[in-house]
Length: 114
Image (tube, rainbow, N blue to C red; front, side):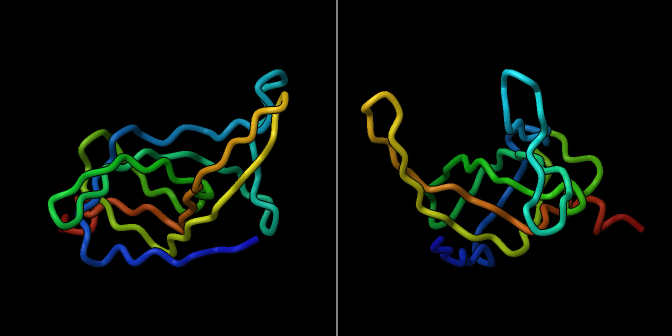
């Protein structure tokens, strides 16, 4: 699968919705896991602001890469962000989009304390 690295160094990023477990199967409630490490996956919605434009991105992150205290509005740093184009067909309807994944979402508030 194609992965496109995303440079976030010039962006301002803050939490739009706190992390929640990523559900693999809504019927069973099974939590999605990372294929390589087996770590449970989380989703974090972030507001990504660059060049005066703001977007909400839904990031998938291993739970080991989510720092504590990611409340709404917390400024964060993103590590290892990649975009992955996707396409599927369900009931004869083709859908496509871009999913975003990060190695880590780290609170900048915690980094400045002490």
